[in-house]
Image (cartoon, rainbow, N blue to C red):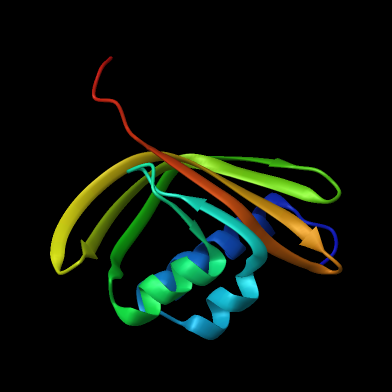
Length: 127
């Protein structure tokens, strides 16, 4: 998929979310760049290897991921998805409901699109 369209980016985002919920390591390995920088809303930062180890080991379990208000910016070799994400997660055995604003950066590596950076920030309840 060399030329990326908004519908294709949405499909990639959907695939990423399904794989995170299912802890599908093969799909996550394919979708995440080896250069991945994953910044959680807590401020904790994981590399690809660290994030995959957390998911595979069950330290971080994604139970539900619902995105809304998504916007896409796409160029030849980079794409950004941003919006609001509501997540049900189990972290270290404790369940949490999280609402965050996020920015997810995809880059084209050869003919394949991969996530290179994720940044989430706790959503404000202020008007």
